[in-house]
Image (cartoon, one colour):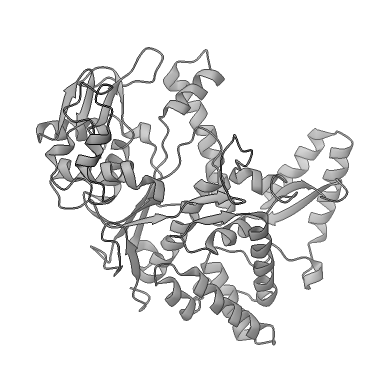
Length: 479
């Protein structure tokens, strides 16, 4: 371990906050359920990405960067993806059309979350690469289902393979749901082919219009839950340290993951610690397209959807962390403005500090985060350090800069010449030339300038001045 600070994490499985003790301190392992890439990721998808990136950073600091394995999957087989693929690529075979759709949306997701200051996970497996047995011998979905059938935990019925929940006496531990209650509330007539109404699908048949893979049970596709059991085992083993995701995944997804994995491998547990972030609302309401408040990460980064202008990824990151990860969050313009003001204050206090690669974050900030990611208390410490830095305390300024970097924030993203920071003249000139080209409808020249700046590590964000409606452009250094 590189840090002497003990970690304590809230475990949904036990409903208690517990000291974190990894199975192997030389290989700390974490799995987090990633997005279903049928479209651009919405702001709710950003919360687990940011929360577990913070935990990833803390684990790397505590145990060593090379001793933490973080897996976040990509779901690229789903009914919504199927429909989009058929709509956008009607002349292609469906499996190929699905890959076209998900490569584009997957790349957009990667770009969006990078703008939020997140590190890349160690591995980002795609579900479709783990359906059938693999040349490298890593666990796959079909082989896991075969094992569940052989172990007496799954059965074929009406063209499906189903998990038999009554074959697992302690099914329901994570969610605390009573199996008999689930059975009583199920629609038995609809699922007459099941042994029990609560049994869930591991494999289902595919029609000619649906994606499919040849399997021992005919051409079909996997159920949703089995993919994470396969991919987590492929990279982390049969039992690992931490499994994370949103609160909405506790039941049925995570409950069913546990059932599949334990019954396939014959283990007492799947993950030692289960962590879940709280729900997100937008301006006090549940996010919904019907309410007109459905917001993607890209909307916030690139447009004036909220507040009339684009927001820097650092601001979105801080706005998300200002509420404890287990609590519900109301994502609003007011919250974004508060985060922007606070972050600008920190960056002003840290300006001018030059960091070395091994500069350590403030120990008190790390200690607060080690208590179940208590970012609020960590931010109070940051405020105190910034106050010292503003009194020309060079050590405090350097400490603040190192800590902001550790937390995933850049040091100058919100600073302007008014903050005593001079913007590079060549970038300002290029932006002016590009704006002139856009106003003249010379889009080819505008694209050329943007590409040239991109090659220099500069990203541009266009927005409209909320008062004048004039087109303006922000810039930032790529991470």
